[in-house]
Each structure stands twice: as C-alpha cells, then as structure tokens.
Length: 158
Length: 158
Image (tube, rainbow over all chains, first blue to last red; front, side):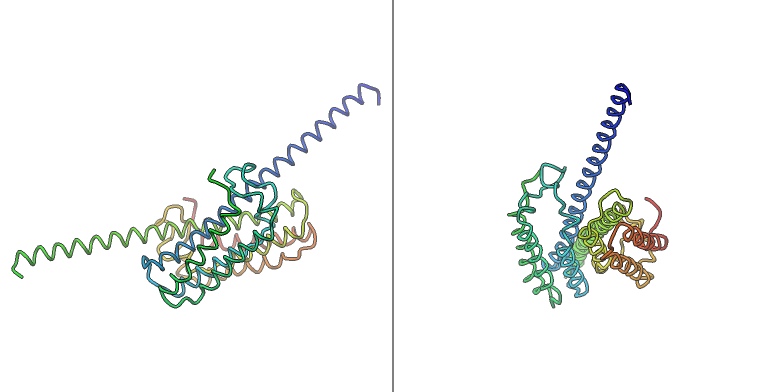
C-alpha cells in the first residue's frame, strides 16, 4: 500500500471501529432501558398482588381462599425472580431513565437478594390464610419487607 | 309507619342500595382495570426475557450461561403464575380498556392454562442451554408457544 491508500484504509478502519462501538453502546443502552422496564413491570405485579391481599384484609373484597392463595404464590414467585437478567450492571439511578436502583444493589448483591428472600418468605406464609383476619395479620409482614428493602436499596423519586 | 313515612323510608333505602351498587361497581371496575394492567406487566416481562434469549440466539449479546438460565427460569415462573388473580372474570376485550383477552379464556380455562404450561415446559427446556446454538435451537419452541396461545386466546389489536 502507498501512503494515501494506507491513510484511507486506516480512516475506514477507524470509522468501522467507531461505528461498531456506537452500535454496541446503542445495544447496551437498549438492554439497560429494557431491564429497567422489566423491573418496573415486576414491581407493578408485586404491587398489584399486595393490593389484592390488602383489599381482602380491609374487607373491600370478599375473602376467597383461591384468590388469596394465588396472590400469595404469585408474590412469592415474583420475589424469587432470578436477578441476572433484571438487575444488570449499569442500570442504577442516574444512568437509565426511571431507575431508582441504588449502587448498593450491586455492591451488596447478597444483602439485596436476601431482602427479596424476606418478601418470598412473608408471601409464602400467607398461603393458606384461612379468613380475612389471617390475611390482615400477614399483610403487615409483607409490607414490612417492601419497606425494609426500599429504605436501603431504592433511591429518591426521579 | 304512615304512607308518607313509608315512601320516604323506601326512597332512602333505594338510594342506599343504589349508592352501594355504584361503590361496588367502582371497586369492580378498578379491580378489573388493575388485573389487566398486571397481565400486561406479566406479558412485558415475558417479552423482555424472550428478548434476552433472542439476543443471545442472534449473537447480539454474548452467550452467558447465568443470564440464559436466569431468563429461562424467570420465563417459566411467569408462565406458571396463578390465574385466579390475573385472569379474573369480566376483563375480556371490550369490557376493560387495553384488554385483548378473548372470552375463550374463561369458557375454556383448562385449555388456556395448558397453553401457559407449554410455555413453562419450553422455558424449562432452555435451562442449561450450553451455547449460542442451543439457545437458538430452543427459542423457536418458546416462540411457538406464544403464537399458539395468541392465535386462540388473544383478540385483535384495540
């Protein structure tokens, strides 16, 4: 190659590398945004099922063992979701729109996972709640696990 | 009671009954809308996890056994969600904004549940997929279960 050809080739190669980097970053950005949306969907489902139980506890909805057990089991399953797809690195508050995830989620992953474990335990304890009073007795424990996790691992409102 | 008192009492009773009915309907409407939103969150999470696997299958994301297994397990857990809280009666397409649920979901509840069982089975078969090719081989079966269910139980776009 002569000097001109070398220069053109180098420039083309540099462009290709830049283009690849941009594509890769775009892909990472999309993956991060998608993970945050999926976590919000998870929290939406958690909130929904706590609402179902809360409605029974308050007497706004009639006690129905099938509904109570379903809500408790779904809550437990949501709490037990694997973290590797949902809590991916680079998705903390400030890096992805809508995220309120604190860096402690990653610096203390075991502690964070344990908080979800507490929700799972409290939800499973609700399975078989025999009447409105039993649902009322269990809902406090469930709500307590939400609060305990949010206090440590959730940032302020965006 | 004299006639006037009877009339007033009857009117008051009728008002009370109407008021109670309105409150009950308002509660039922909110419950129905909330259930549909929770189902959409469930589908959002299903789509997200299929997207994670699809990205590995296409080579857009590097193969990572922890991510693949997490995606497969979360998909299976989402497919196994209890129906009693999510697919409540009175939430078919046309009755609740955003719903595309066909009446067959309730008239053929066992068939509908079996379709989710097919997704759960296909997702669990993905756990342990050892490389990109194995993810690619399993993703078709997962997508097939989505299509098979939507064809029968999902209505047209709203």
